Image (cartoon, rainbow, N blue to C red; front, side):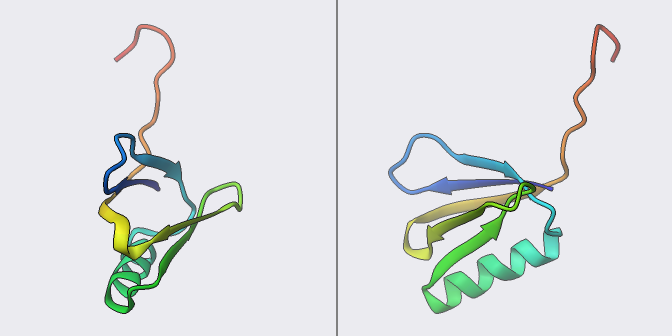
Length: 73
């Protein structure tokens, strides 16, 4: 699952792959925003990503894009 996080007043977005499902990520984001706590997500290598809820601009959750090799479409 690919997750993109936009942070307020930062030009670049945070992009990472996660083994968590879309529903699990959405629930974590919602709980963080409701409570005003830190959003904690885990990437596919087991590393934790911590973002304060106060600076979240957006969170985009989507399927991982398969990358082709060569000239095929």
